[in-house]
Image (tube, rainbow over all chains, first blue to last red; front, top):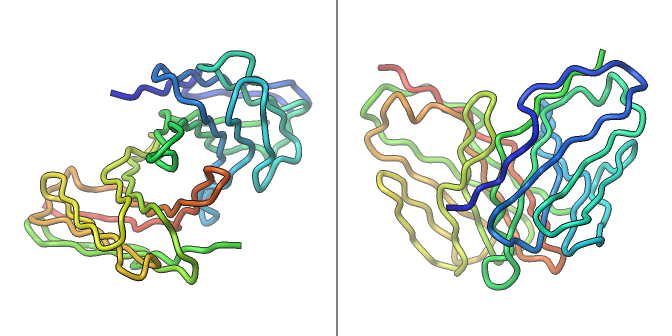
Length: 114
Length: 111
């Protein structure tokens, strides 16, 4: 079974803090993704990575950065957290090849910025 | 950009009833995926479809990849209380591995 884990299920931070969200997958997947999910807005792609040290902006990258130093780990960084970044953050990974579009999600991190 | 229209937005049904939901798009997709998300959890993949016309089952769930490649449906037969959750469709097939997601169907099952 594919397993995608996220470092925290719940996180509370203060405005201006630097926040790190970690994601690890154990299936040697090439592609990894970070989304945020908000009521009424659905899933929105923040950043994705198709290889180590490679990254591409998604639909809403502003205020975020990412790091992929190892194949299995993809980190989302909020340089200076703001209240409008309170959200559910979901990490996903996928294989290249025929099933490259099939993404497997982690359990999510509910981030609250006060 | 690409958009998926998922309907219905919500459903309230009695245990034992069958459920049907669908997604349509003005764009062609090469992959259709169906996920279920329970409160406070990440989406879990239910069914993946990779070929136009494909009909795939997973237990009480059946999904089809529309022949035009612009739509897909998910059926749940004989619903049970644990079917409660939000069901998402997603279309894929671009060169950048990105998925386009529907807004979800909230399913409530009354015992």
